[in-house]
Image (cartoon, rainbow, N blue to C red; front, side):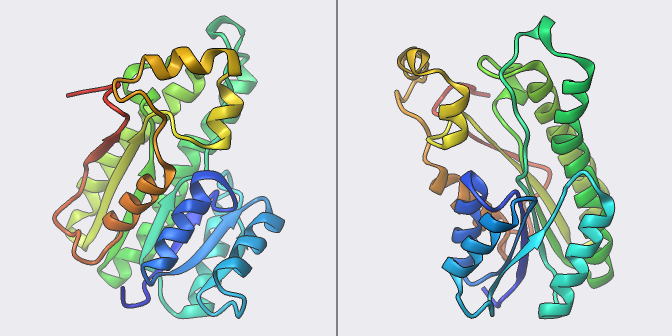
Amino acid sequence: MSGDVALVTGGAQGLGAHIARSLHAAGFRVGIGDIDMGGAAALARELDPRAATAVALRLDVREQGSFVAASRELMANWGSLEVLVNNAAATAARPLLEITPEEFDAVVAVNVKGTFVGSQVFAREFKARGYGRIVNLASLAGQNGGTATGAHYAASKGAILTLTKVFARDLAAFGITVNAIAPGPLDTAMVHRTIPADRMASLLAGIPVGALGDPKFVANMVTRLAARDAGFVTGATWDINGGLYMR
């Protein structure tokens, strides 16, 4: 990479941290956006103690102003802005009839509104420069309705798939690509928190390949879609689910 600048939302831990590491290893300068500034700062120091190629940014994806501030800080640091990875997510395993309207709104605010607002703010910057890459983290739950997550999470991830198509269609003429990745259950702390230990064996038995996915592979796919030569790929959803959903 030529030092393109990428912002990873929810980048302080889990899949977001893997994505930040993958992008940085490929030569991107990385902004690690998160409400957990301690975790984001620790990861930034891990990637580059000099803070020349990795920085931590306080980012609340529910707030448009937070994205605007992050974009300005990245521009002030590096004078460039090329990639947005919408990774931040809220989830809760809750029976359908027990989800409150407030819980539904809270999940949608992070997953759907966050993806929409972030993409809109950064797309304006990308359009002005005639180039950009947006990669959205969707989920298998948004394709099959979810089997181990709440309806609010599944609905929000389905909405991300639709937003990916809308942004891809409307931004293609400006040199901006927009793609989504829909992982199945990955070997991450979030999945292990969501799936009780006594259900893990049955979960694995139901996955055709018989294993959880590798978050590093997903991170590397994000990096591939963020590359300069990925300009002919847009509006696509890349399935990484061990054979749980085939089309």
